[in-house]
Length: 349
Image (cartoon, rainbow, N blue to C red; front, side):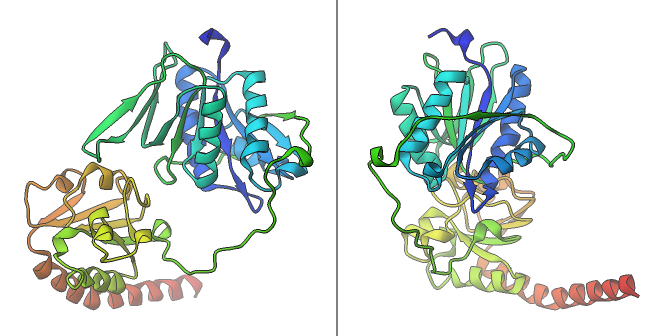
């Protein structure tokens, strides 16, 4: 491979119900930093039906160019047509790096592309950087059960590729004045050639707690001792109007369902306030909550690693501290709400 032929940072853009997926906007923010460091273009790749209209949004969030494959055959995500479109774009324009959201479709497409090109793929990356002179992508992620951070390189092949979980990166503030270049691409595909067909889309109707959207998350770990002891986490979350999170150990013990799990093998959250109670602070958990605005840890072990990742730490027994917090919050929250109501009345007077 002649690496000089490969230039540009690409983001695979996911669109759902006419809206750009938040993870794609987050990756544009990360990609902008990489592109600026390499002094190259940041591109979004749009594949879908009727998706060209979202291109201006991508420019506002940092893209310089958008490659568009807009055709009815791309109405629903399927591996084969999407893979063939992205491969076509890669062969034509030769990107140096492609980043995907670590979503079901993003992971599926990335692995298919990596196999066909062929090239390497780093999954569930949490830190991205690039060498300014060589263009070598530095994709870091927890390894060996979360005990170390491994930086994975792809030295022999291009493009370099990685998937990144939602909520790990930060989207840029949109700039309505930014514009860019739209490149409309086309590949000849026929429905009868496709080996899979979408017969029906069944929407999930089971209501689940979306802890990744909560402003306050109260998370508990094995330090809560038992499923009964873990109920204190639920009580504190209820008083605060927050969502309940958990460490992997708690989920594996059967104290709470998997969709409450925070961390590398669970959900990444970025609430305004994150309580880590009875959680040791293994790196695989920390990567799922480290971007929270305020992190408060409670642990009876003063040497627990979680105290290296929090803004405020309380050393003590959670079974003594949580009831005190619940009692005090019950007293103070109504006062805060009353004061806010008064301010709102004055503002409208």
